[in-house]
Length: 115
Length: 111
Image (cartoon, rainbow over all chains, first blue to last red; front, side, top):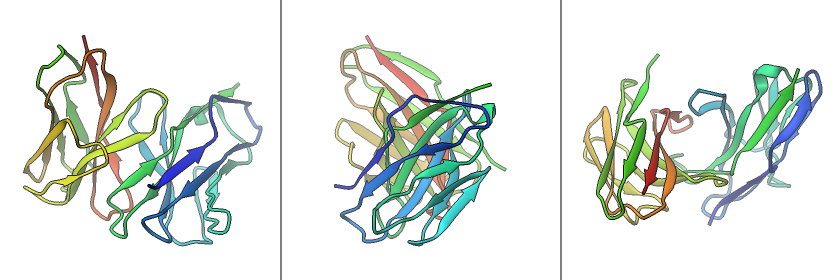
């Protein structure tokens, strides 16, 4: 079946440092799945951070970027300079079918940003 | 904007008990989902529904029933709770199939 592997947390960084969370995927049911990063901030529900539905494209939101790389089957999340408010759990996910109804999630990466 | 409400927030059950979780959304979204999250694991899809009275099985449907009574509500039933089971159940909805909106979750503990 389809699977998503991401950096195991917790990841601790200091404010203004750069952050990268690795995500690789294996999609057997669809050649070019839709790729997502979801985030759960403390005390809040899971919400979409960014999505890319076309291979080779880059998505960005709140200073985060991720590029859909079909050659390496990767979708790493990066931010050049993190803030304390970026402390959260980040989930990489892929949309398994062409209708996008079934998402396969990674285990989540907890990020702690020190002030 | 809209909101997804899940009830109850915490659910404590006994082994073998049938337990029902409820989800309401006011986005007017067509598709609704139930996921289960265990500690150290990603979310796993239990059931989803693309319209009222529709049900589609996910990867984890065994041991669960679901019901889409109307467009705005989607309930999930644990048919027989397993002893020492602990998990968070997340409800979500979507309209364009690219973004799912999630509720706050129901935390289940089985004694």
